Every structure is written in C-alpha cells, then in structure tokens.
Image (cartoon, rainbow, N blue to C red; front, side, top):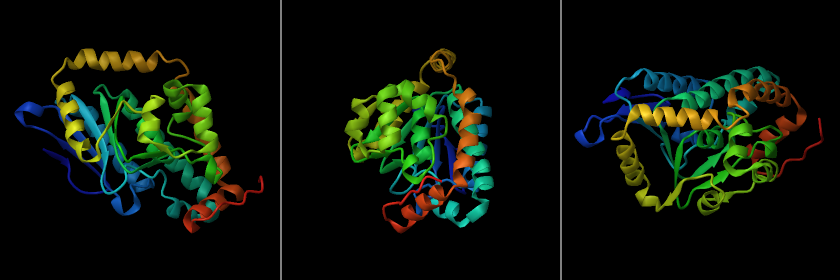
Length: 271
C-alpha cells in the first residue's frame, strides 16, 4: 500500500499475508545523496506522522534510495544561504530534531538498513535514533560535523555516547574517522553486517519477524530502554539547536562548507 508515493520521502505499508504491518520509509533524494534541506525534512516529518497514526504499522524499515543512505545536510544548499545560513539552519535543525525524536518515540521498532555513506548529523543521527541497524559490508560511517566547523546534532550527542561509550563517541566526533561497517559493528554502532546484495532481503526478513511479534510488548520495551538511558535526548535538543545556529554564522563554518564543496582541506581561523 502506497502511503506517500512521490517526493523526497516515500512511505509504503506492506499488506502481504506474511508481512502485514511492515512499513518502509525511503529517503528519496538520490541525486543529492539524500542530503537534507528544509523541504526534505518537512516531508520526512510528514511520513513519520503518518506512521504514528497508522493503526496497522508494527515495524518501520528506514532506508535510502540511490548509492548512499544519507550524506547528512545538503551542503550546497547551506553554502548558498550566505549570511542567512544561521536562520536557515535554525529551521533545518528544528525539523531534523523532531524527526529524530519521532523515530525514538515511535511505538513500532525502527530498523535502519544502511548502505553507501552514512554521514553528518542527518545520516549518523538517524542511525543512532534507530532501534536496530543492519549495515551493508561496504557501508561507511562518518560524523563529519566538526570537520566543517559545526557540531553533531539530531540528538547524537546523547545517543552515540550511550551506544558506543563516551571515549569512543568523543573520538568519532572530534577526529571524524571513516568507519567501515566492520568497525561500526565492533563498537556496537550497528547490529549486524550483511553482504551488500543481501541487505534488502535481510532487512525485510527481520522486519517481518518483528511484525509477527507482540506489538504492545515491543513498544513498551523500546520506550523503557530509551528512557532508561539517562541524559534524555529531548533535554539536549535545544542546546544542540542553539549551538548549530551560533556556529553557522562563523567564518570557520563558511570555510568548512566551501571546503567540502571544493573538495579540499579547510583552513580554520577560530572565528
């Protein structure tokens, strides 16, 4: 069943007998590596709200169309905003935060099936906000925010340290290594690594398995696990948003975006 069949985000609900209750949310800006801008995030939010309101949804599968899961923010759009970037990023960050919070609060378990690059606050943050993560063998994970003079967001300053530990999270955020799928599995960032060609089938098989389970028990378990971690994500979101907006007005942030677009090493000056 097609719930959203066009636009930057697509949403289906499986109605086959052996897969009733499996929703599939697909990031659909392959030409931009599923980079996030305001229209994309508004569509993402709408899809999550439809998932919230659908009585038959038992599990949500999250994936990206094209060669990459999600490259994070749409840096070309960001760079085009010039001095208006802080105001634009306030809006982007607000939408991203409510989307990440929506995935965390969704009663149905969220399975992320990731391939290609998983980068930035968008890609990395969505992985951290998912309940189970399957990664293709060739997938690469990079936080990347501090590399362009920004900070991690989508609640990942809370979720990532809880998932991999404070020391490893700090290393990931500050040095921005390109983690392989095997690296991500070793530190607990992903649940399982599967062959590239098997990712879709493995993800659907797991989704069908969860959809056949007890939805109330799974929803309650998910809620208790996330709420029991301490350092609640929602308490951190306003400070993340304030800092993203503040930093985006600096020369270093503009330099970081330019360096990504021009594919060169940035030259930061500290203001």
